[in-house]
Amino acid sequence: MSENKPLKKVCIICAKGSIEDVYATLVMGNGAVMEGIEAKLFFTFFGLDAITKKTMNNLHTGTVGNPAMRMPGGLPFPTLLGILPGIEAGVSAMMRSQMEKLDIPPVDEFLDMITAGGGEIYACKLAVDMFKLKKEDFTDHVKDIITIGEFYGMCGGEGTQIIFT
Amino acid sequence: MAQKTYSGKTLEVTNEGYLVNQADWSKEVAADMAKEIGMELTPKHYEVLEYLRKENATGIPLTIRKVGKSGIVDIKGLYDLFPGGPLKFSSKLAGIPKPVSCV
Image (cartoon, rainbow over the protein chains, first blue to last red):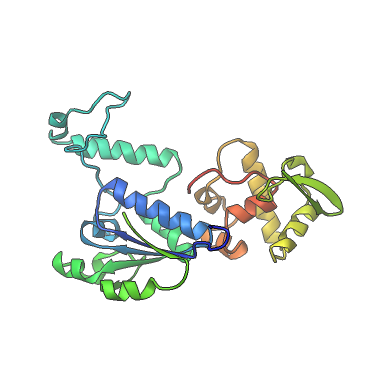
């Protein structure tokens, strides 16, 4: 089936601001443009952290309420440990450094790579208004602040998929 | 496995068209492979191909990010040279295996 109807465009919506949610979006977006697939990324709600200058390169992962969280070595990570000050920041810094070792770039550089390949980055107008953010709060990678209706308008065409991370 | 004729020689290629034996590679082979996907190679293309062959020999998986930092070409430039498959097409034309990294 993939031979007959190749994927031509992915429209990816990112509504969360944790490392894993944002990187899922970025890896899929970059992976698409590297394969010659058009990519449009729409950031909304807490996902806006990934394109906000102040927060984008310091994203965190949740250390509380995350049953898949493990200590180095694989032992379970006690939730009570996760609530201690500095733990979330430390775990997040460790995750970022592990990714760096695999040549996975920081968020701003990842956005450089995606836009260099023709990928487009959008911010959700509703969420921008809600969080009282302005155009200048966002990285220059952001092409526009648009409504979900306008985003859907870009998601037409055969071989297009909408992905919600 | 499949076979293809490049530069007058019959060469072993994978089902996706990557050279099986990296030693079969030559500039002429690369030029013939490029023609197949409708590309004409320039000296800049060859510079990238030589870099990829050299990096691949080190055994560390190639990423588009690494190529972008090579000093030979930036990522935008790599997309311009190999449209639709910056790492995939360049690896194929460099006669090295299909990239295994997600970035």
